[in-house]
Image (cartoon, rainbow, N blue to C red; front, side, top):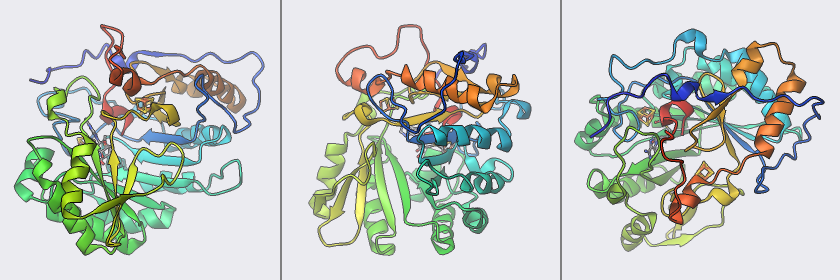
Length: 374
Ligand code: SAM
Ligand code: SF4
Ligand code: SF4
């Protein structure tokens, strides 16, 4: 049973104001943390609200009409997000993913996309700019997003069976409208597109093969389906290990029907293990966050809706960059503060959990997924 409230005195407030070094050193793009991991990937949550109530992320009993979502003034403005993103890029970030909550609910999000699309990496290249969405508003927004400079999208879809999907999103939203969003995104040129399916044993694991068959047969390799292990993010989803279907079993079930062979990772720090259908009909991904930790290469930072920096999806404390932004710090000072924070990072929650150690101190609460994004 999910807990009713998150004491709002508040995990989201559990953030330290970052220390600004006395003499900031200009970013070199070569920042590394205590385990030698670079900073390459920034995920930015643009809203903590969502029009779905997926039980593994925002269960209805907790995220109801009484839940204190952030007031508008607490959110970073697009100018503030872009200013921080520019500093992160100077530190070596090459990929930015907009997420949420549901990022397409943020008004005029395409204006933010256009602002971020102007940024260049330390090597002078355009950023890899992408967005994760439940696709409820994608058919309407795909063209504007593409025109603004978005390169790709990832769509979340947990089942093709309409009754199963409506139950999982818990707001009775139909599969057909998500598929219409996918079609429109492909027509607008936002491909190749990834589809994420969170697999929960006993809820939608019978949909693994039908999902694979559908995306193989309909899209000529333009859609890569990725199976994600159900994770113990946040404190409210009532996570239990026996609801996780290990990726190895997903692979076994798929390989029995559509023989597969492994592919090389496309980039260091890539979360998905890639497999290709032997008959040449595209590829799939397996994201084994629970059974096979990939902390060793984790180069991802997360920026919450209100400007707190989290160094791990399972962190319990953030670093309040908004306090610096709104307290008059210079770009140089903020860059210096981010440099100190990343250099001190030693997070590796999944690895510790996997090796049987307690990854979170007792009494600590993890941050919620909808607030820092996936
Ligand atoms: N609302 C958007 C969506 O669903 O695509 C973006 C935000 S959502 C938090 C980002 C991703 O996190 C989604 O693909 C979602 O399925 C995944 N996710 C959320 N809770 C999860 C959990 N407990 N385990 C695994 N993946 C989860
Ligand atoms: Fe909303 Fe995405 Fe979370 Fe589902 S996974 S509740 S769509 S934020
Ligand atoms: Fe990265 Fe934390 Fe996930 Fe490990 S548990 S891969 S450090 S986000």
